[in-house]
Length: 110
Image (cartoon, rainbow, N blue to C red; front, side, top):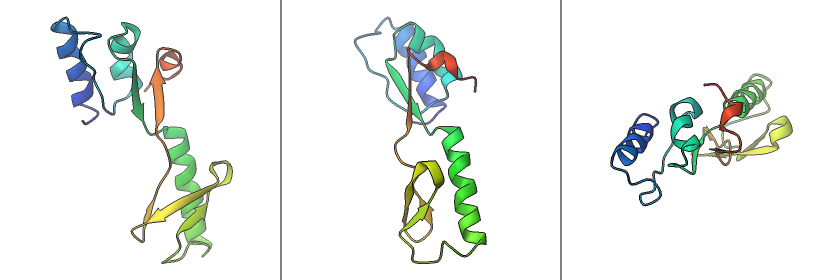
């Protein structure tokens, strides 16, 4: 599901009184999902960590500018993120998404 559909699905499950019976799965921002996570209608939601995404983007662009990332390379070094895999010739994989849940959803405001 998309980041727009996931909170609306959680709302539908809430309105139907099916929290705990129907699982909502998808990508969304912590702000959009906070009420559903806090109400324990949704256990967790995933999204790429924007801090890591920005961090990786800077490392990848620097590697391109410096000539360290060339066509055909299968990985690129990204500092604290380690080596990131390059697929399809130009797609850099960040890695696993960040999981927002009842323990950490309050720490994020976006």
